[in-house]
Figure (cartoon, rainbow, N blue to C red):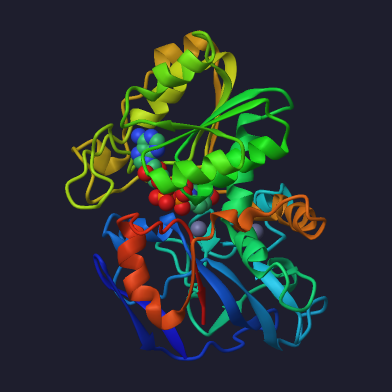
Amino acid sequence: MKAVVYKKPFEVAVETVPDPQIGHPNDAIVKITSSCICGSDLHMYEGRTAAEPGIVFGHENMGVIVEIGSAVKDRKVGDRVVMPFNVACGFCKNCLGGYTGFCTTVNPGFAGGAYGYVSMGPWVGGQAELMQVPFADFNCLPLPEGTDYEADFALLADIFPTGYHGTELAGVTPGERVAVFGAGPVGLMAAYSAVLRGASTVFSVDHVQERLDKAAEIGAIPINYDDSNPVDQIKSHLDGDGVDKGIDAVGYQATSAGSSAAGGEQDEVPNIVLNQLIDVVNPTGALGIPGLYVPSDPGGVDERAKHGALAINFGQLFEKGLRLGTGQCNVKQYNAHLRDLIIADRAKPSFVVSHEIALDEAPAAYKKFDRREDGYTKVILHP
Ligand SMILES: NC(=O)c1ccc[n+]([C@@H]2O[C@H](COP(=O)([O-])OP(=O)(O)OC[C@H]3O[C@@H](n4cnc5c(N)ncnc54)[C@H](O)[C@@H]3O)[C@@H](O)[C@H]2O)c1
Ligand SMILES: [Zn+2]
Ligand SMILES: [Zn+2]
């Protein structure tokens, strides 16, 4: 089959790789109809992780089951399904607690597995024609048959639940004021989820104009951090007050104001968003941090950053009595409910999708998405 293979920093290629096989009676093989490129893929693409050449990318996958192992009971050939990016067993201690992002079965020695991702186990990614899904009854979310809502459903694999997770980690409740840093796909989904949860005011901070425009479309107040300090801008909208809740949908590759959005020499400041959130959230508030931070970053800006050690204003955090939550999204906690919001036409997350293209176009799309150019916000590959 054809698949998107990581070759070296800033290069992927579409190559022929072995077809996946039923390796265990619990497996299913899914013919992929949609697989998205994610901001998380870019960390590997840019050589900012320990990813080795040869990995098939793709953790945001949906499609139709074409083969099942003898032990698969609830799913059947022909089912249209979307797979959480977390590969999980359903029966380990963490899975039983709902923490399927921290499954201890699927990636021995580590809590958490994913398709096509460095350090997340042997699971081959779905930016390909076919994909093997282990524990298929658990890992396949059934969808209505047909082709309706394809782009919306594809986002149930990761970014819609992950954005929602940001609001859950921050405990967003009706009427609250929320600041979301990052208006990439995850940040837009977090802002959208805050709106769905009844936030009274949502700020969306970024410096990519197309992304800020999308945030404005869903009723968020766009804040361009290239203009001036985003904390001051937010407070000036609130007569000097801060917000109740804050969400970091940027992660460790945050850049400072004025830095170029077009790749190359960016002024990277890995702690800037965390410290701005601590500044802008009011005492007793909370921070949701779905943005990725890593314990090992070969390209870290300094010795400490190379080990994921960041200087954060813990004194101010303590003084304000702020709570914070981090980590991989446990997609299964939310995906069925979010699917039903889509089917009921109460949510349309596909407003973030900017490009739908064939698998062969992936190498060019990675380049453009990496530079956030030509309005590349969210790309769906249709193998
Ligand atoms: N926790 C999870 O389960 C999970 C799942 C998916 C993605 N992620 C992570 O979420 C983050 C966002 O993902 P994405 O796909 O939206 O990525 P993305 O790279 O497309 O978006 C990040 C956005 O942050 C903006 N940004 C950079 N510095 C900023 C700053 N100082 N202030 C405000 N905005 C700033 C960038 O311009 C960009 O638009 C990534 O770190 C990704 O790895 C986490
Ligand atoms: Zn993703
Ligand atoms: Zn498990």
